Length: 335
Length: 163
Image (tube, rainbow over all chains, first blue to last red; front, side, top):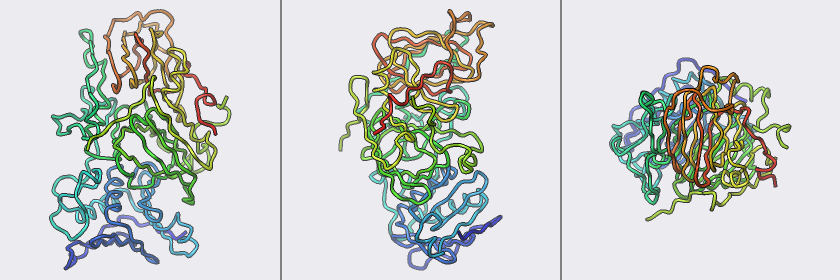
């Protein structure tokens, strides 16, 4: 494996391309260039091309997720791995063909440096009218020459709840007032509020809200919001439509609970990328995503998904060292 | 373009499929409504488990015992209407165990805090250190985000797809 570590890396921008208007960027040993249709990532011994819509959908989510838990594959070749303080950017490291021919490359950076670099690139390459966080049918195209850069925030992940969404002093659920109407795909549902009758003096101590209403108002896809936290157990809910624009490699076990509709998941071996098969989850289905896989979801209709994460610090290292088995229900518990 | 959202229920659900060249036990694939249909009222059947944390499915029917936990729990109503009643605990009733829900012996001795009637899609806080009881006049289903505890039931072989 070809590796490097770069401290205090700065992203360096070229002059705008005289024809298309986009800048090229150098960050560490990587360069990033885009044209009308594609992004070209190059490193000392290789170059790789990714369709621009896919690249930008992956990049803005990678930033918004804070590089998430584990590996984010933009495709089978290029991506990032989170080490919670540092981030690897890799090309071909998990691709047998690249490794066998010695053209793989992995470079480790400080997390903040990667965030700044990815934000700088995204800002320059995303035009007004194109929103990579929305479903493809809800936004314009990223193709073609540079027009006008978007002025609103590209990254608008929902502020995470600290205890439970809607409690006094905590984050509020989405609403008409917050500028989040019910999405067209959930317009057939009715949404009411729970009936809360608190005794005097206990207002704000008992609490409930309409979780489905909050999800149905999401203006982003494949972008979770934290709604409730039990110690280090985090409930994330998301609105999913079209395809997850990354392949997620798990560094810990996580659980999916399909609340409405269905999602089709492709499952691969984490290290080799070899296919293991597929899972179709329908409303009410529950399934673990083990720590030794990659997965990518396809949601034919906008659906609601709940993900239970274990945010205990250091779990990634325990799984990596084999101190924890890479699946959640150990043998003794099957009875 | 119009849409039809599919939401499962005790009476009508369609289970998905799992086709893998791998040990299906690693995925523990189950369905909340199938689990609730086979459960006794207020059994707390684990459907997700992540080290000390878990999600439990509860079939709500009639009234439950009183529960309390040393941490917040959260219930999402997946079917039906469920009433949650809350009381403070008496000084001698605070849980001494580390995690998960436990049944109270007897009635809670503290002040009544209130009640919440919740329906499909509603998420309810079950506050740390309070007593709570569920009741439902018709069968309903709740999914509870919590930690594994004395009331957690594990029956993975019965609820999961294994071939």
